[in-house]
Image (cartoon, rainbow, N blue to C red; front, side, top):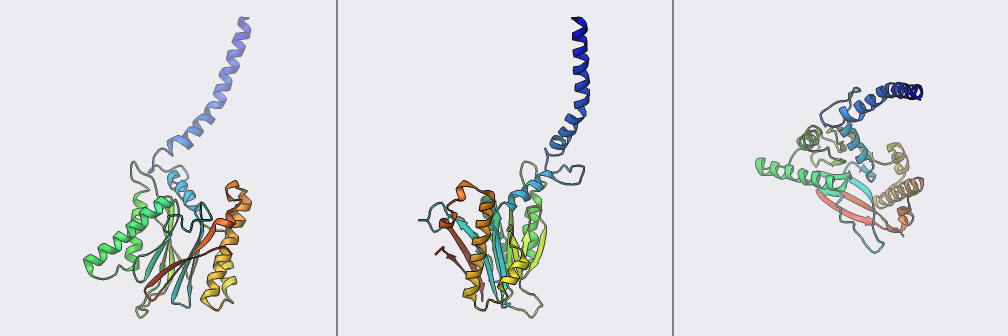
Length: 270
């Protein structure tokens, strides 16, 4: 009996010694390097920032393009709780100045906070210098806010991305229209005249489909159809029960900015 107990204890001790390195390794990966925003893992990544970028990538797709070098189009889908409703309460697009408009995708609450910060930046600049805030200043200030929350104790990074459209009214200084994206890490990316964020529709497909479109009305309809098709394809792949009747509740928000004016309207399903 004593011999059997001794053999059992030796086997248990050997098993513990074999699994201890795996337990320690898992603890190091999930515990030591992920409990703090400012702690890098051995590969040089920040776990919280990586997760924030994943949260932002789950947001709705947003399409942006410059038409005839003078008009900005920005479009995003909107899935409503009921076909009787026309708005979900989330303002996707906002005009900051006569030249700059902004959209957000990801966690909607985070997006609203950042859009409010963008409005504060341009209002304070206008009040201080009596002129509209320039694009580089706005991008720098917003990127700084994003970056602050990647290393701020007791906080988390923003789980949203911003798409900023720029359409300068005075081209004599060499400024050109374009789109810019700010990620949860604070990185600013120049996207050019075509922009697609958080969608499976690539910019190459966008260019090819819009090359033969001649009027703005047809372009709006084409963009709306592409977004509907992309979103329905994603829903079918995921096979989400909540998306079974999406086609009846899906509208496309179209924002158009030209000559200092900013218009948002909806394309409903026929």
